[in-house]
Length: 257
Ligand SMILES: [Zn+2]
Image 1 (cartoon, protein in one colour):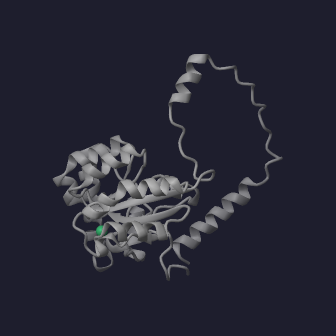
Image 2: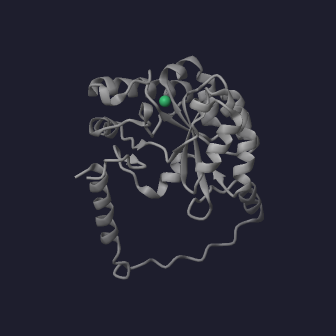
Image 3: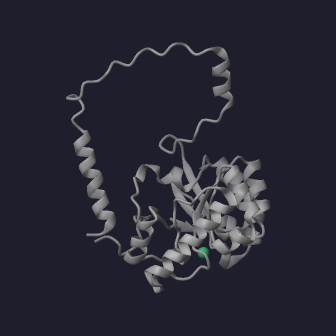
């Protein structure tokens, strides 16, 4: 049985166990006292988190960075109040730590994308572990947080990669579609492809080392937001999936049983 299947079963069991609601005595909820006007004002000023069950969400993800255009990209994301997820390569985290710090500070998500970008399915577990750990350490040093998601290089994973990811407590995040930006390197083509594959709760693969991607971003974000998309982090999108460490999402082909 695949890990995904067993965790799905686990979810099913939990759901069943939680179902007999009426048997549980409920403590009556006390009527909340009206909040003072000052607090209400503060709450209104503070942004409410996006709920992807209520609104149309999309996650833009940027791999292999921080790339040299990350600063411009962060400016654009800030301007349009959009969040993104950066799957960082440890060697570039070491080279450009200030961008990583800024990503975290500005509410973006940072994930682990190895240290030197090898194909994990061709490595021994010890080498995979080393690639992941070195990147965890570099991100921690740069921004004070440790990534909670793993995207293996090329999106390639097998059961061994899944086992190592599980040791780190991380699910494996692939993508629902790619922008093909590394291939076309053309602003119009990147916009066209991204708009064609954008879908509710989609996870789009992009790269912040591709200048044309960063150039396309202001117009692309405006168009996506005009279509009703809320640009959120991967964790916002996968919240409802109840992913367990080592699970892959979306499930790669051939992983079902
Ligand atoms: Zn990559």
